[in-house]
Length: 286
Image (cartoon, rainbow, N blue to C red):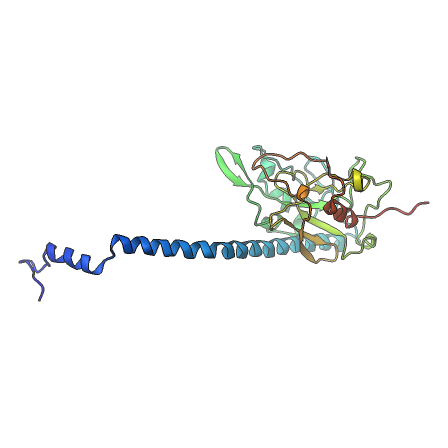
């Protein structure tokens, strides 16, 4: 029988005694916390691996959706591909507009540059701007004292209907103007879109220098390595893959909110060679 006071409540000293009898000692509490910490430490690698795998799946799905819009544009325009060019001007005639950097420029956050037909040739086919960004891309900018995610991580192969005026080697290598032009490399080998590193990406063009090979090879733009040294990439036939880079020079450490130096020599880099072989091919010699 419990002792109570006049109001029917249990006496404080009895309550304290019951708590001591039912509760943990400090030693037991420390032991429980230690066990939980060990379990979490054991689970973290598998959780991280699961997250990377999920990011990779979402990344490939995004790339497939962008490719589908690219393909639908060609179907509606007599097989002609959307245009790609370098530079910061926004306007018609290109697959996407906007210049990304780490400044307070509105291009970093302006989704209309992706989905409006005035700025993007494939914009009318995609109404979800999130597909232009790899879920593993965590890059942000500060605008008006607030932090915003940047809107795009995808760039297009410069050999897929390059409409710029700069010399990229178009006198020697093929510029694919139509889907039917993509024969060498074949549609299953010719890549169209790739995730570019956050400290490399600027315009919507990913340039692969085809003139400089082997000892003279260069990395003009850096592919992303968000997925365990790998980047999401989609090919002209529509299949997507996570391409792993073999050379450490292709995946230097990312310096958050800082731009990396572009157009650097990378002799005998197998990753550069792979990009070259899957970007375009030599024109026939007359």
